[in-house]
Length: 285
Image (cartoon, rainbow, N blue to C red; front, top):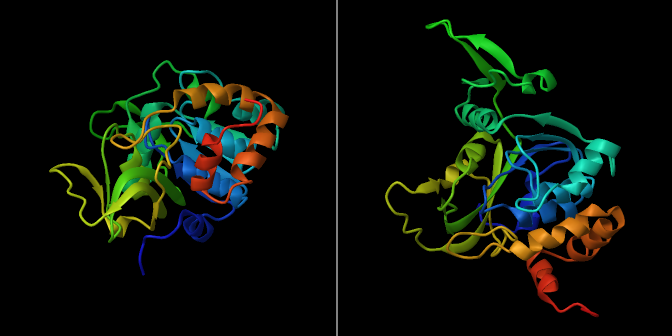
């Protein structure tokens, strides 16, 4: 069976209500199209995992898909707060959101531990920090060799990881390049992994030492050009800075946000139709 399927089919098959799901990507290659499809299919009670929750999780939280967020920073990069995240945490709208906060180093190491099939990650961190006071999962262990006290956190093993990449070949192998966050580790730590890509090619032509995710480590590959928008895909698309700026007033108000979601996500069949609608001239503007 081919791993190359539509994004709608991949989300329907492999994302279940109640799953823990990581949508990873750092600065670029953020899997926005997948977040839209999760909203269209009204997946519920998800535990969202991401080192830097930005617009993808503001969307999912505001749409009522999430029950918990595991993260290490959250915001609209270069603009300000995530208003749907804040509203859910502070006022329980559209439903209460449990949060579990970590540091960047902590969560990155937790992904690595998950990818390594280890129960927890060990790191030299949190000395003098108050974060362990609000996250009881941050523990301490004593090194059996040196006696040094170290921090320990549970490994991250999502039910599903979703990432965006530049290329896949027809067998389902994936190549990504540019700034890499924890996409590789998040993919290998997960039970199931969905990858959206800009292009499907006959040969990846991967240079030596590049980041290639082999088809055996992936569950589904979906052709979604521009699927990282408003973030960028190095070599294919540019960052849409204006969208990040325009998101602030959209997300700030509950009614404005809900109307936008209904028109642009629930009111479109797929990400291609969303892109066309977003690009179309608006009446009175």
